[in-house]
Image 1 (cartoon, rainbow, N blue to C red):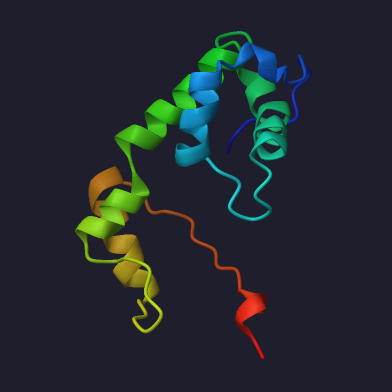
Image 2 (image 1 turned 30 degrees about the vertical axis):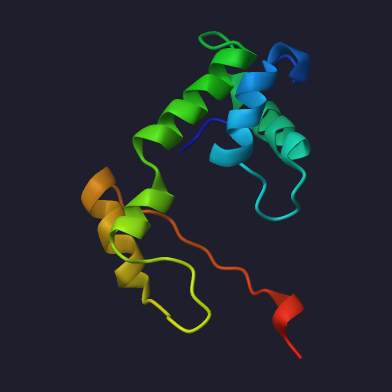
Length: 119
């Protein structure tokens, strides 16, 4: 279980370099609302504050990027021929198996219906 909601310093995004912010837009975007800064602020305030004894704000986001790079789920799925498609569907097992094979961990998956495509 991840630690959360610890007492700590609120995110000051000026402490995160513009270069790292640019990298995070690719590696850790807000896929739901598109408000990356608000998303990262929430992640720091909920989880990052718990790591403050070890990692400062810049280091926390650098670590998140390093984790993304070491287990790039997009590339893992792409290498398993699982790519976005308007016609192809995959089972839970189709998606979990390649991720688990690389990470040695069973991912927690969720789905969100795209209501904008519904009649």
